Amino acid sequence: MITRSTAEPVRRTTRTLIAAVTAILVVGAVTVTGAAPAQASSFGGDGDPSGCSSPSTVATAPIYGSRAHLTGKKIGELQLRWSWSCHGNWSRVVMYGGMYSSPVTVEQIVESEGRRAGSTDHNVRTGSSGTTAWSPYLRLANSQSTACAQAWLSSDFGTLNFHTNGARICA
Image (cartoon, one colour):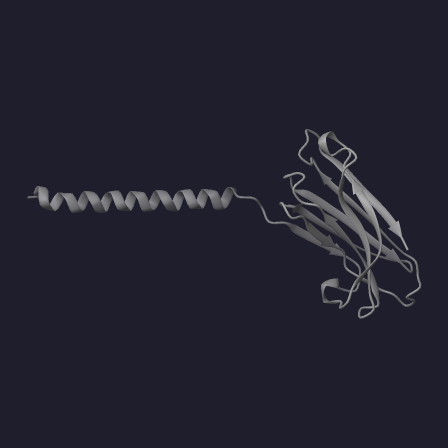
């Protein structure tokens, strides 16, 4: 026979178990439906420039918004980078933060001496402080060779329409 004194702990244990299962289901649902991480793919080139020491920016080109509240505003810049340690060039896109919350797809290429390398980064979020993305570097036979970089940023940029903005530079 279950008395009032033995029934209370059973009820308390049942409520605790139900609360725990509910918490697990809620956390699982948030994990499954949360934002996907940025995904990147690249082609060509001689490696990741993050291993190149003492990089410098050779040339820059602004990237401007073209719709709604971003029309004519500088939303980032394309940089053509160089490092003597890697003897190579690469492109880097700097996206300014705090201007829009939508994820961005960043496509970029660098070309020199008849070769090409590039990358595509999906679902990039700038946050309030901004972010960068870069291509693989191209090791050059001649440090005086002209190199060109081109980038495209695609997003709705917090507007009603999906669109692409970009830039191209050579040095």
